Amino acid sequence: MAEAFNDKVLTGDKAARYAEVADEIASVLDGETNLTARMATVASMLASSFDHYFWTGFYVVDPLKERELVVGPYQGTLGCLRIAYGRGVCGAAAATGQTQLVEDVHAFPGHIACDGRSQSEIVVPVFDAAGELLAVFDVDSDKPAAFDTVDQAGIERILQATFG
Ligand code: SME
Image (cartoon, rainbow, N blue to C red; front, side):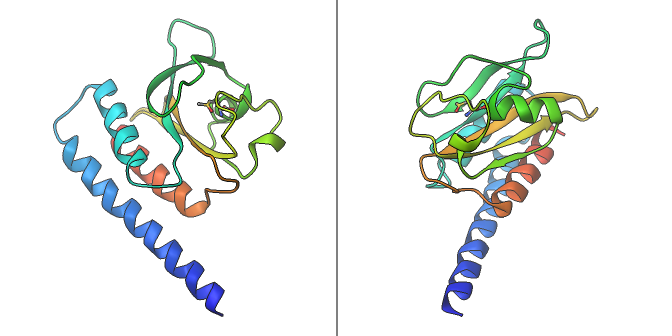
């Protein structure tokens, strides 16, 4: 009973914080059309809003390469520079166009360990207004199973509002 209640309270708090930071991001970016500025702001504001975020950033579709992502704005330790579609968690999100929620990165086939401290992650594809894949947004945690469907809904909503 108490556990269920506490879980609910925690879930409620996290969902509320996502709603709050969504408004804050929209307010900061009002009138700003530059894509790098928009991505940098989303990465910075989300990374500083949640303790369970360890690495936070974008891998952007490289228009000069065939099915390859290149690192974009991020907060955290040094990230890998390039990821092919289909490789690791980011590559899976790019190849399928679907959010990847990974409780244990070590159990994910082909996971790319840019920083050995990463234990779990969520990667959400980012689409533009025309529905074209623009990037993927990758959040890693140094704790196992740090992300759930509340994170997924919160992040997907912010990315859709900011880039869709
Ligand atoms: N974890 C990612 C690689 C990117 S970094 O962790 C910054 C993956 O397997 O796609």
